[in-house]
Image (cartoon, rainbow, N blue to C red; front, top):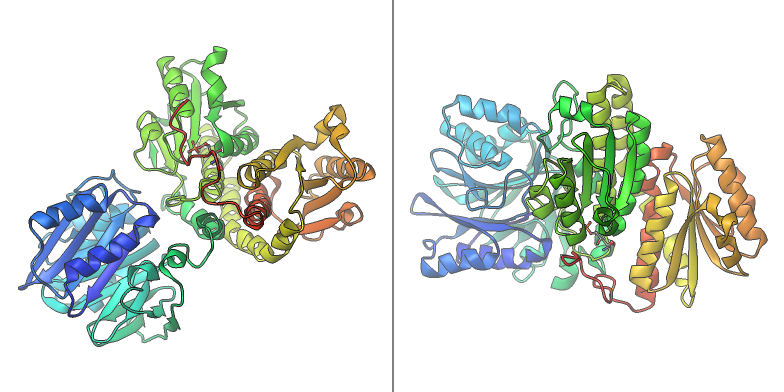
Length: 614
Ligand code: AGP
């Protein structure tokens, strides 16, 4: 997620903005920039790379002294991380400077409108289009506030926007929808930030902006309206966090923060996936429809958590497209002399985009003429660069080494890919795709519901301090969830944990069951009678041998109650989408148990966030 800072007051705007951006570096970014208004002109400096690159330029020649400025650290979504795509962006007349966090869903339509007005666009970003739109408004006589209101009324998607006008050196105007923005209230000065970390060294008095709100800020005055200029109340609060807590949004770990970000990141991963006519569209699908129609086999390649996302994808892709899918550990793939040809589609799933096992596997596949599609969270990283097409997951930087929001947004991207292929191959049609998309768009609320039971899961986790072994059971799409739940416990609590397909127990693993052994069971929705009944049988088998059954089952499923020592309820969702909610209690369980054990949850022993060696 990008970092945003705004300032108006007696201090050096450049220094204050840069200080704020430095406190937002933890959010992860790949370029940075600052703009100030001085002497009736706009002065902008921006550079790809880390803040140090920008500071080096400013050390050589700083911006003019100014009391008003904005700044940005960019996590690239549209367009590669380079100087031109870095924010702030300006309009054609260089009167307006603007920074943006989020995704403008209708930017293509808006771009046509801007280019029609003979405005040359210099970058690949959706943000630059908004800067031109705001400038068109002020050039036609509206003040910056009204201009921002009128532009926000045209925008679809998620956005935080902050702008300054060279002809109004006293006013910063900002807007937000589905993207964070807070105001820091000073004495004779005011601040804006993506989060309070940007300004708590100057003030701890803050305003939290609500949905679809505009804030107009001068040195001595802050006013909040809706997008139509009607005054609205913003919630004032005192920040009692220290800087470290502020970076984690008040949580103790980045991982816990990222677990609770999942409703938003899943919603963000669905933004902009459909054209105005309702057709599915993917980020960078450079594979023609007929090439996809010729695909007769799909091989998903990944490691770790991403591999488990691929296992879930197999169920969805095969069900919706009837195309055979294999899921392969990247580290094994190229050593087994795989059967690949020009009608094979390789899907590489990687949060970091730098995992060496996965990168070398897709290079091997490409050498055999296979087409490669990457599902990745990191813009322009090595794996997308080696691929023919990319679906970005838009989870924002994932700081915790143990993947959580990265996993959920990979699942969403896999569902979207499956539906896209079904749309191209004609194995699913408009109304069916619409129905599944509506189910997906309802998932953020369902994830929020599961997060509401966090306290129960935390109590359960703390009660398991001292446990030496835990088993996880699942069937169908719940089986990869069991594997991922076991991985979370291994990598965070350093406890032996193993996931099994529940039907496999009687073929050996049931010998592991002993009195009191915790067994977490992911129970499929009742709608699938074969699956649900067989899962209950497996649970009865382990319980009869002394296991302590901790069951995750959907609301209203009473049949599980006699066999669950502990019951965690899940929202009712379709069986293929259940991984999106079933994994959340297992993430919380592992996070809390590791915390109770005194482990470093964000940096577990022996692990790296990106494994760039084979
Ligand atoms: C997940 O919690 C682990 N950190 C690890 O298994 C990870 O998923 C794996 O290394 C793959 O990483 P990638 O998604 O960046 O390729």
